[in-house]
Every structure is written in C-alpha cells, then in structure tokens.
Length: 158
Image (cartoon, rainbow, N blue to C red; front, side, top):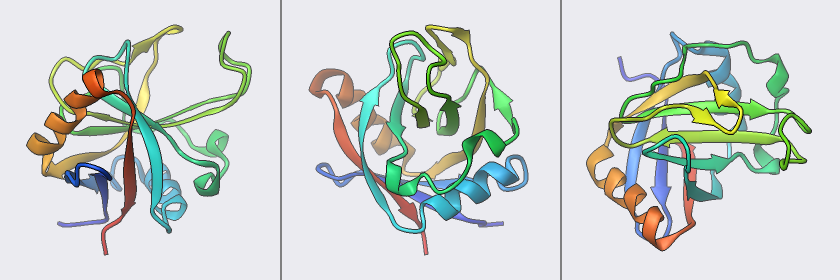
C-alpha cells in the first residue's frame, strides 16, 4: 500500500529520501502535516545535540496552518529507529531559554536514537518513515555535524 509520501531533500547536495506517512498509526498528525505542506517548504536543518542520529527542522510560519495543541499523542516513542520521522510541539515559555514555540519535524537516520533533551525523556509522535533513499540521506545528515546547518526542502510526492 503506497499511501501518501513526502520528500526530504538537501537543497545544496541534491540528496533526497522519500517518507511514507503512518496514516494508520498517526492519522491526525499526518493529516495536519499533509495540509501544512501543501506548498513545499525550505527550512534550516540542524543536527540534534541530545537525541543522537537526528536532524531537526522547525516548521516555518507559512506552514503553521493548524493548532498543534489539538493533535493528540499518536504512535509515540522515546526510542525511534532509522528513518523514523517525528513531530513535536513545545508551547511558548515551556522551557527556560526557549521563549517562543517549537514546531519540530525530526528525522532519525541511524540506530541509537533517543528522544531525550533538556527536560528529560520526551515521547514524540512518529508520523512516518523514510522508505527510499535512506542510506544516501543518512550520509548527508552526518555531514551536518561537521559542516553545520543546511537547507532541506520538504514537500508532497505527487
């Protein structure tokens, strides 16, 4: 069953992977993100500090078309696997040093992922998995540790 898919592409490198949405396991999150990504977005991606092999991207304001507080916990874990894509929302003022909201899309590219941060263990919704192109995409993800922030485009696969 093909289902809806998104692409994640490193703009400068051209490296791309395809993510199959877990519409059966996280239906409301998948629906919200699908609507939010009606138009592709280009966003800065950073390598995570606490979570291990993860890149993280903030959903930009133009794609914040839903109420993140209305999304229920769906398909949550603290131990994602390679290719797992997460959704995480943190409200304004929830954490010292982060005055604004955090609308995060994350992608784990290797074994050993854990969703642990400054506030401790943080279960997150796993809304999809990269099912094509993960090996090359993972290599590009690793480069963020040395090269720093890079731009990723996320959009729908027609």
